[in-house]
Structure formats: C-alpha cells, structure tokens
Length: 564
Image 1: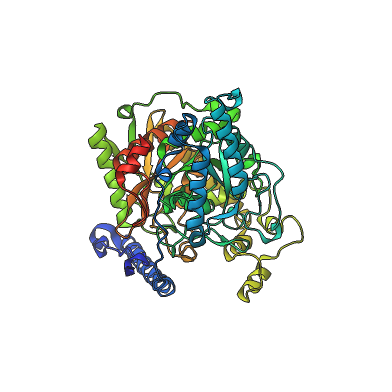
Image 2: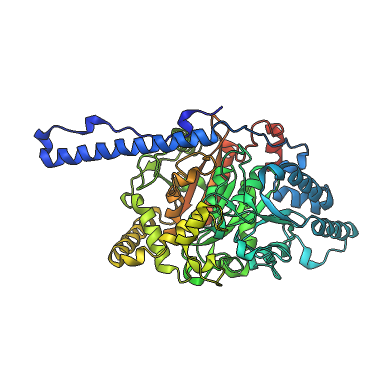
C-alpha cells in the first residue's frame, strides 16, 4: 500500500534557528529568514511534485514477479562453478534453470532485451561433455577458467558477438556486434556462459532505464518503480534472480544506483584497473578518471573473483586483492547522513536508520569505532561532477544522439517530443539542451576544479591506506517511474566517488517497511578495492545481503547455505 510520504520530499525548517538579533545582528537575522523562506518554498514545490507522482503512479496495481522454484537460483556464482567442476551439477541444468527464470520474469520486468539461449545451451553441453570426459585442457583449468559454466548477463552498451549494441539509440537499432568487448572476452575465457544483454537508459546518461528501442525496465520489488540507470536492466535481472553475475559501467553511479534500487551488490573499481573500451558511447582515455567498468552480483563472495577476471592482465597488478584484510584494524568513517547536498533530496529516514545500524553493527561485532565526519565539499559534489564532465568530454553528446551522422537539434527534438514524434527520450533531449553550459562559465569551472583537487587531497589524507568510508548510495528508496524528472540531481552521492576517482561498493541491507531495497556505499582510497570488498562481505553476514522480493524467495536457510 502506498503512503503519501513515499512521494514527498519534505524537510521542514526549524524556526528556532532564527536567533535573536541581540546576538547576530540584523544582517544575520535576515539571512536566517531567507533560508527559512527558501526551505518553505522547497517544501511546497516538493509537495506539489510528490502529489503529482502520487496521482500518476499511486493507484497502479502492484504486480508480483513469480516465486523462485529452483534452489539452484540461490547458489552464488562461486558455488555454482565449484559444483559444476566437481560434477555435483551439470552445466546444462544450471543454464536451463536461469533461462527458465528469465522467461518467468522478463515479461514483467523487461530487463533482458536480447537472448542467446540456444548458443548458451550449446556451450553448456560442450562444457559438460569435456568435464565428463576427464580430458580438460589447461585453458579450462580452475586457474584459467574459475567461472566455468556460470551464467552471465551483460549491459547492452558493451559489445557481445552477435548481440545488439545500441545503448538505447534508435539510430543504432539493428546494429549487431562483431566482436566482444575486452572485459566480455575475459569473462568468456574464464568460462562464463552469456545468456543475453540487458537494458539501459538512452546513451547511458540517465538514472531510469527507458528508451525507444526496448522500452522501460521495471523494478522486481515493485514494477511501478524504476530500476536505476544506466546499468538498470543488469541490476533488475539480478535482483529478480534471473542472473547471478553481471557487467555494468559507472560514470556517475550507473553501477551503484541500479544495484541499490534492485537490492544487489555493485562495485565501481579504482580507475585504470578494468579496461573501459568496447562499449558505446565510446570510452576515451580522458574519461578513465571517472568511468569504471565493474561487477554486479547477488552475492558478495562473487565480487572479488569477478573483479580479478575483468581486470585481467590490464590492471590486476595495481590492486591488492591478495593482501589479507583484518577488519578490526581498519579505520571507519561515516558521512552524508547529516548533511543535505546541493539540489539533492533529504535522506529518507529509513536509509538514515540503516546507516546508523551499519555503524552499530560494525562497532559491536568488530569492536571498532565508526567516526562520524563532515566534509564541507561533499555538498558541491554535483557542481564538481558537471564541471569535470565538461572539462574531459571531447565528444559532443548531441553528436552521439545523431550517431555521428545528421546533426540533431535538441530544442527541435523537444518540440517533436511534445507531439510524440521524436525518437529521443526527454532526459537525452534535456542533456543535449544544457550541454556546454559549463564552458560558458570558464572561471566558475576553474574554481570548482580547484575545489575538487582540494577535496581529493582531503579525502585521501583522511582515509590513508587503512580507512573506509560509509556513505548513502542514494537519498531516496526506489522512486516511481518518471519521478527522476522531479529529482534529477539525486545521483550526487554516487557521483562524488567518480570525481574523487575512488573505488566504491554498493551493499544491500535488506528491505524497507514497504519491501524496497535498502543499501549503503563503502569507499576507500585508490587501489584499496580489497578493503571495500571485505567490508561488503562482512555487512552481508550482518544484514543478509540480497533479499528476495517479498513473497518470492525460498527459506533464508537455503540462501545462507549457498553462501557458505
């Protein structure tokens, strides 16, 4: 059942903040009055927007995705790989189980937009024949193919042989890849069996996955709500138990937001660790400081082996994944739950409570102290993100909208969209309209980039080599469809770690009172990915990790056994 509070974003001011002019003078008092009036106006606007969302979305029926019938689905990828290799499970049985699951849920979710089921079954049959024969070539050894026979789904923005690679752009409809992206090739060599590719936002630049090539993807916990973007289809099919591991990319939260909204794990690696090439839009070297290609999983145990495989020979040596991590010897910091970022919604009370529970759990179970800190520059993370994007982007977004062909005029597309005649989504059109605004204010951009450099130095000094940072993944629980138009800048919490060039892991923390996923981000200094992954595994123990949508799952004991 929907509550009005689900649609509103209200944080009423305290009039007690207006102190006596005896202490602060007329100027300070007037500034306080201005702040109060601004806050009241913000409350009113959010109330109107929230009420509109309630009218549009609140009365839609809540459809439930079918329950999982096959216990294989509740096995981690690491467990499946072990059982396939030891012949406790046939690869064909595992692949068939996931194909059946996708068929059960995808009509409701629209997450997987292109299948390769027949090819996957042929590959599974070959793996079974090879393992049954006992004659296993070295290329399929446990060392070289650690995920032999494990099903995998991939974000459609990445090239997968004989699969579409449109990134939701109508101009690219029908385009099929003739090669694998490097990270896809790495995962194939590791033994993964690709089942299909998953939906994205148009040109991967919005946090709702909807486009005019494939349509809109629906949240497995409530199909009336968004899945996030741009790796939204990937997060969705994982959350709906139609996949166990997947591939995403993240330039402002495109792994971590979908992972959060769909209740799974997602990791944005340190820069320069995983190759970003082989995806559209093209990832140039200048974007490497912000863009991260990384793993998305239902089980925390799969994050590290996935990252090893994806990094391969390119960047694995930069990481410290073989270093043991003693969680009791780490320093813990918590930010973001007591400050409102510029242009960003107030933090949902349930998410604030979840972050507090994480602090309590770590302090109780590990005997550590979680230090609450305030980072003044965090408030400006959104401004710095836009400035940095403007500074590093050599390829015009408008050119991408036209697929580097006939010129696209965003304002004309806006007029066409009003009459249902444009092939572009409203978010893409809006981004095309505002593209380059930062270039018109070079001095402001320069100041923000200088502020960013100081922010990086500050956070690096705080974290050192043994610090981890706990931060909200998003200020609101999974919003209803189209609600991101009301809160377009709510990706600031994730964008902060893109501009800081730090690794960050989204960790699920169970479900809210309404059955929607809760979560938290864990970040560390550059190349200290092993610390965030270790904390993610610990929090999975304490909070249960991925939780099946209400009414969907098997007994909790079954899931716990699969993690063992």
